[in-house]
Length: 610
Image (tube, rainbow, N blue to C red; front, side):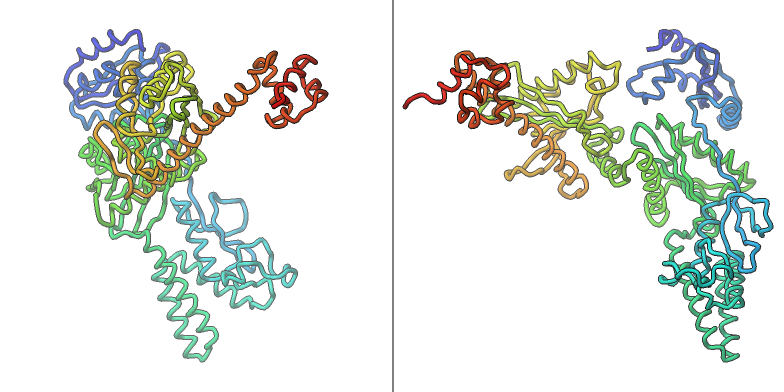
């Protein structure tokens, strides 16, 4: 904890209840965080109070604060503008800093006689024709790919007419996405006409392209060129099909951006969908390390994003309303020069768009971590069902196993980001009592686990890492037995039990508030069932291993001269008791750790006369 915490809180409590900007410095007098406040005293004092409700990133920032300064403004809106300016100027470590790595994109028309269309991120020093620049590389790439498919233009590296007839047509020809000029059976006039039609499509859009193609088709019919008219008709059909596909992500609001956020507690991702003319024209995502998720991140992302993106939409659709929505509307409206509206829809088409945007944010984050959005999706659903503050990225699950109170053991399994983390699995032998008592056994195991945490918490690995969620194999009794253990160690971790029905199948999750049915939540039900089966398998496997060793040990160590070391050596050498029983004297003598006398003792033990 910051040794200056008391002093910093005292200074914060002396701040005025005025709007302004606060600036946090470290010992090296470097700015590490800049924020704005409606009331400086209220906002800044929150940092230096209880740390329990702060995200890990906020706690680390506070630990590094040596002193702070502040600037009073006439209004909260002025504070917002000043905050944007200062963040851009000083780029503090703990603020959201967006990197603008997007350039302009171009449509390239090669300078060959048999022209080809490609998309490029920058102009090259050649004789080709470049159409653009365009703001969205996504839009250019998608449009060029559509044009090449619709008008069946080649996208390979073959050159014409040099490569006529040198190789068979590629797959694109067979799936009717290329006219295959490489065969030498396509006239230059037909090919050049298709290139011109593709350029008209790219410049004028699908509706204008359909008009022009329809006129050409009618003209060809009048001139009795029925084969050419049929080919143009096929192109019109392809353009219309492509337009229908685009309607899947088209919206009734002609000019808007959609922004959604997803976090797994360790990282966050902002996804942006950009619409112009009702059509998706661009999308991009930004990964945020150590998310705070305290409301300030959304505001700082919006101000940072539109500081580097001058094209501001009339409508901004978010997955949640920011606390400073009115201020952001005013700030965006001033930059655009006309009114900007911020909404957070709960239903209808717009809510569907927000949901799609958020799924893409989850997918982008999942790819970085080598996971899938489905795995993140089930964790998020589990978070909502259990009312957790964040996604349970690190889950520990426990089960007890015994046979009539003998060889009482427990198993602990770990799931990280929705997948088993087998390197973190642990086995426990119950030590504090003999006999069968699953409640006391579970309490002992968790007590030992969190004693280890207190000793290793600085490592933040293994037992030094706190789980986001603990799931016990059992009902309310197991949960009630473990709750005092968590209080004893001062550990604030979500605790629930996994309840089974009479057929030993998962039925529900139980906590201090009673049972929570998961039967209607297919993804969560499957996830919990697999986890419950896995922890049961692991615990019972350890129990069977203990029982097997006990049988071996009791059988061999009853022989005079055979202790644990020789018993282990015999089992390792012969593999089974049956093999030891059937071994002759010479074989027993040749076993490591054995002598002639000990070998004779073993042989005589298994060959006693009736």
